[in-house]
Length: 398
Image (cartoon, rainbow, N blue to C red; front, top):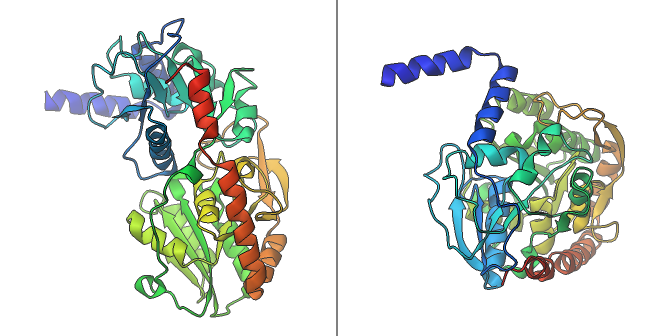
């Protein structure tokens, strides 16, 4: 049997990527269970399904949504989804709604191993994230699997409504209502000096190197501070092992700069929080965001944020509460093809202006603290529980 599977795998890998992906989509689309044509009018709480254990933005977002349900007394459990994850349960609480924290194109793949009645008799909600103003064509078949669509930012809501007009509800992640794990600054424990101004970038290279734009962060910091030893840029980048070429480009851009620290290790949450607690400015020179969990958490922790003034991060920041970097819209150029959408654009942040913002905030501690406090207040007001509670009520989930 092992030999047969090995031969089948070799045959499968010999098929060119494009037809292989098309075949996989067709197979999983045929296998995945469908939702009922009409959902029940009421549900007793909700189960959330997604990559709950994954160390990624989507995994953390699913866990935050789950915590929000628990805060409202609506939590009926969680289901781990993923191709290589444990088996999908054959049964769920009969009267509970199901929130699929899985983007539309991935639903068939994630549900292909589920029983045919997995979605039967329950309201199914798709919680979707996207980073551009337009959607790929493969988002168009998801109405077979969900009755309702939720999304965390007005930016993403507008994009999804180009395909599903009038069906999308804005439900920002309720970070402000949840108790953030405590974090104390301890720069010495992570090798950072107490006297320096620390600018931090936290990103996962698996979430698109071009979109996260770490090279822009390096360029902005070097333009602002040169090689000043008391102005340090920390690049905390996950996923380097999977993308060695991208990591090589980062190292080349850093060159001999002694005030840029590259961390490509996987850190536990406690250590990441220690890094945030010791950060003076959180920098996000992204080209696009569906939401932006890292800058949102930084603002709630009272850290000044400098970020590109475009896309989903404007759900919880504006020009009064963050250093918004001006930009121009350019055609999407993504070597990996994750954002291969005809005619799509994203932001090209103005690196000189980003450098100017960093310089002003670094040299003026009072100004930096004032911005951080305004950002904290703004994010607290924008990221409460009310939208999630209203969404549950509107969908008959008690």
